[in-house]
Image 1 (cartoon, rainbow, N blue to C red):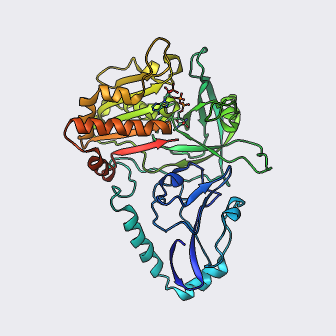
Image 2: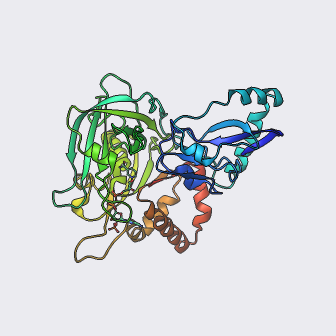
Image 3: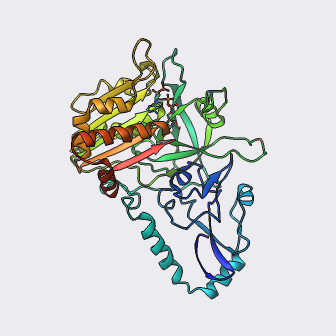
Amino acid sequence: MNAPAEHASIARQHLIDPEICIRCNTCEEICPVDAITHDTRNYVVNFDTCNGCLACISPCPTGAIDSWRNVEQAKPFTLTEQFSWDLLPDTTALDQLEATVMGAAELPAVVQQITEVATAGQGGPALAPWSASHPYVNIYSPASPVTATVTGNYRLTADDASSDIHHIVLDFGTTPFPVLEGQSIGIIPPGTDERGKPHLLRMYSVASPRDGERPHYNNLSLTVKRVTEDHEGKPARGVASNYVCDLKKGDKVQVTGPYGATYLMPNHPGSSIMMICTGTGSAPMRAMTERRRRRMNHNEGGELLLFFGARAPAELPYFGPLQKLPKDFIEINFAFSRVPGEPKKYVQDSIRERADKVFAMLNDDNCYIYICGLKGMEAGVLEAFRDICRANGADWDQLRPQLLSKARFHVETY
Ligand code: NAP
């Protein structure tokens, strides 16, 4: 366990609900004691390692992580058992026994106490900006997805580009599917995996603003790159990305979500946004930029500063056309890594080039910072922030918790 055992033979075991989990890896990354692991199918919690700190609870976009079962202390669910689950097990008998042992009012106090310990010193639990709109989450689960219709699918990258990135538009007809910029949805590919089980859903950030790709139609867009190789560069066919990139107009798609209650944009007048992305991590940046562009005359905007890393200009999803936007609306800094004859440039190099501006925005309480894209860039970006702070006599390690506590710093990397 996990939460303290109040009865010698009963323990409260921390588990992950395989039915709701979207396999985003957030919990595994955040667990300070490496109690969470995964196989190709499930994310699971090691009973012997988990110390019940609850650091993983609030960052989980779906709430799948907040699953608990009463078990006999000597017989917790093993990792092998958890890997085999499609559903959480029923432990009603033990729940009833615990209710007689432990007063019903006691458990929330225990959990509250652990939550305070878990969030102390980290800048507090993950929060959305104070002026963010209220998000709807988890309306449609894998067990009861909504059917959307494909109304558009076109390739964003140039014909000669090495990446095949698509812009997909999904229409929900008369079924409600409210999303905000920064939220994600799940797509369930049809068919079964090698074990004969239905494919797991894959999560994609929404690339359109809240009023739809086509304003006032019940639709949204996604940015999806066809996966043709694995992380080591060996040929591999991504099940979901190939399914989505090959969709035709009129095709029906099973959709879950929406997900995410904190990676949301501020809406108050004068609020600025610093956006740092690589490749298809541009999806939420496109959504936020489009929201601001459509609301140019509504006195919402502060400044928009974008750092966008891509292999080459031909590989750019979206921000090619957006370069035509007025310079006083958005400042765009591209970092291209594979342009023949030019040195490799990453977003963190561009951030360093704009050090004065970045430092001013880091210290502006009305500026909100969003990072999205490759996991690998996160360390480089944080190092650039650290160097910029040091050069200005400030300490990034002190500033970061302040940004987190004000919900000014948001990271979504894979
Ligand atoms: P990519 O084309 O492989 O890379 C984009 C750029 O990032 C390239 O210039 C690349 O340079 C550079 N890069 C590589 N390592 C870096 C590092 N350590 N620091 C800074 N820059 C680095 O990107 P992608 O395939 O589109 O992948 C984007 C990521 O975003 C994926 O992991 C995806 O899962 C994630 N994502 C996608 C969505 C979505 O909705 N589709 C949403 C959120 C996140 P090189 O020339 O060195 O490769």
